[in-house]
Image (cartoon, rainbow, N blue to C red; front, side):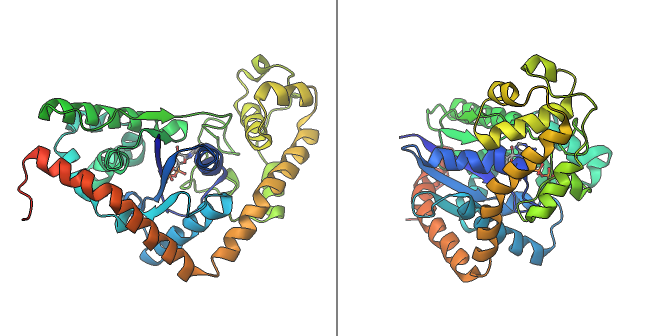
Length: 334
Ligand code: AQP
C-alpha cells in the first residue's frame, strides 16, 4: 500500500492556502486505502524565531485544525516532529549527503534568507535536508503538498538517489510529489502575484482558519480584483491573477473544475461573484473553525493524540533509522 506523508509548520496563522493546498488534500487521501502520517513540523518552524509559548499553542492549534478538517487520529498517524527523534537523526545523515550547492539553489532559502543570508540560521539553510528526512524516514511514497514545495521534493529525490548511489544500496524510495487540485497555489487576497502566506504582515492578505464568518466575508469583499466581469472560459483569466485566484479558490471549495465554475459565473461582475464566494467560504470553513475552537478547550486530549501518534510513528521510523545507520557503517549497541 502507498504510504503518504506530509507536514505543516506550526508557525501560526494557518490559512486557506494551507487548507486547500495541503490539509484538504490530506483528508482526500485518507479516504483511499493508504497508510498516512501527518506531521506538525515544529523543528522546521524554529528555523526562524518562534516565541516558545506561541509555538506550543500553534502546534496544538494545528493538530486541532487537522482533526477539525477531517483527519481521524485513529486512521492517520498525527505527530509532532520533535517527538519522533528519528527525523532529526536521519536529517544529520542527509546533511552529509546533500551538497552546499544544492541548498544554495533553493528558492525558499533565497526568499527567506533574503539579502541578509549571513544572519540566517544554519537550520534555515539545512531545512530541505530535514524535510527529506521527514519523508524518507517513513519510506513514504506519496507527498501531497502545494506548488511551493515542488523544488524541495525534487531535492528529496536527489538526496535519496545520492544516498543509494554512494552506499551502493536500493534503500530509500524515490518519492512522488502529489501536487493536484484547483488550488495548489493560493495567492494573497491583496496581491495576485504573491502567494498567500502565514508570514505576510497584512492579515487582510489571507483567510485564517481561526477567522469568524464576518471576517471571512469582509476579507473576500475587500479582495483585490480588476474592473472587468468574469470570463466564461479559462483563457479569459490570462493576465488577471486576482480573478484567477478567486475562481481557483471557488473551484477548490466547491470541488468543481475551473471550467465548470466559469460556465456558471461567466459574465457576472465581481460585486455579484464575491458574495457567492464569501457564502461558500463561510459554509465550508465555519464548521472547521468552530470545531477547532472546541478542540482547543481540550488540550490534554490533543497532547495525548500526539503522544500516541509518536509511539505509532516510531514503530516505523526506528527500524528504518537502524538500517540506515548500519548501511552508513555505524556500530550498533549490543
Ligand atoms: N498559498 C498556498 N497555496 C497552496 N498551498 C500552500 N501551502 C502553503 N502556502 C500555500 C502548502 O501548505 C503546506 C504547509 O506549508 P508550511 O506551513 O510548511 O510552509 P509554508 O509553505 O512556508 O507556508 P507559508 O504560509 O507560506 O509560511 P511562511 O509565510 O512562513 O512562508 C505545504 O504543503 C505548502 O505547499
